[in-house]
Image (cartoon, rainbow, N blue to C red; front, side, top):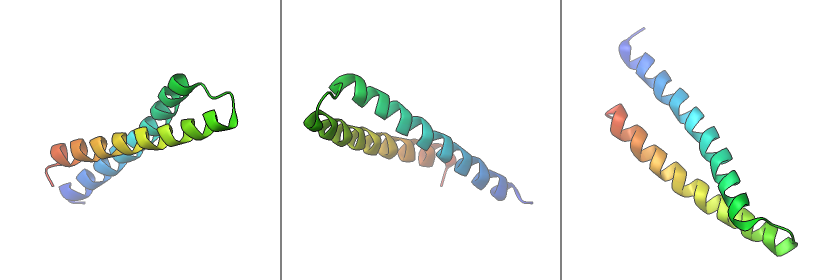
Length: 70
């Protein structure tokens, strides 16, 4: 195997771990901010969770591409 194959696998594994951490972390953060107790609270929670996840994914992609050198 070439070195680039190993680099691709490392970036893929890092991306998978980052996705899981961002999803869970943004869900916990959104839950603590909104604390949904009604239907509309749940809707607000879901919207905030998706916004926080999107921002987190954007930042993670930028950092991974910055450090991977591609």
